[in-house]
Length: 580
Ligand SMILES: [Zn+2]
Ligand SMILES: [Zn+2]
Image (cartoon, rainbow, N blue to C red):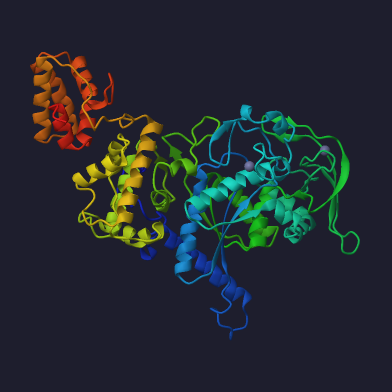
């Protein structure tokens, strides 16, 4: 288990949902959730299916799992919770014979309330607001995301741009999601009935909502039209016409007033007009349960923030205003990035595309297979720990880890086939920090030669396995560059850099070579560097300098002891003796 488990309470398994009671305990949390989803589906079937002769298997309904996001800005690794948590439950249900759809709503009729400080292009590169046409964006405050031009010019709209990145993220971790645009649900009439229902029951809507939200006055109407004059979402509805002429849609009358957007006000234009129920949106607390209804959602995971706010009201609104049975909920804990909350404005953010330059997709899938109810840190600095943990998980599955605990073995047996598409025992994983050492040299043949010499690649390894193993070297190298850690140097392997040492330094290097050859741990080697220099009367700074010269042809370098301990010993010893 890695040290990134923030919760170290004793006796708690890191793999299973903690609210499991012992009798129904599963090795994998997604099985526990799948039980609940099956129970819900069975309940609904027995409720709706009064014909006792019908075969329940034959008309077994498709199960719908939903996630969702407001495409307001940079979709980062934290948002992948929405995709992968749902995915694991979907896969477990598919294994059990159910048809499952995984839908993902882009809440793209939401208005842009403030300008994001950072955006990102379709390649996942972060871009400052100042580098796009911020003025154009500013003029679009208050407009639905799908009505705002794409600041990068590549997609149909601002909303579409960020939805595209979410879709790309799901593709990158190999999860088939079906993106649903909330704007489309209004525009194509899917939302007609539920919107009409909310308007018809606006007194109940007001009563229920007032328990969760201040500022719900007598005039509150659960619909926000788009002003036909200025294009902004407005909140002031002055009249409702539920039954206009035969065949026409219900409408609302409105006045375009100012919108309160946190620390600022977005000005309304004062226009008075009429909008149909397709020309606007329900407020979020109605729209979310409305989505459950029109998409027949059976299960939805959501972050802790929703658990305290939107979920209780959504559950209440669904049952008591919209007459919809809410889905099975699941709350997941947020995780931090290098110990701090994700924040694109603070620059503490990483996209899926960036992460996949550092590790394999299956490692990322593994991260999200761990218990969602526990807080974790995703540490880029210590990414080696996560990758090591994955390698052990994989090896456990293949029965190669004798000291694996029962929990670990059960978890690996159950989950590994859901994390890795095509389990192959002959796979080769170079330890991540060793891969980083190999990444200090550019020559691909040399990388392979060293990996073979060090025993990481067996002689009879199939080509695909060798190729896959060496692909990790590039990733570990990207990691070194990104973190500027001790592997972010170019190791001069092929020939000894020019150097000139005095006799004392040469003696000290020879003694250090003997010490390393005898086999010692990183801190012992670091200590011996000091001791050897002292014994031979060599200035310690100069002695480190000699090491950096020999290995990097530089004046400076990483902490030498731990570094030398990670490089293949034979090479280190020979180089210290200046033999090659
Ligand atoms: Zn775009
Ligand atoms: Zn207006």
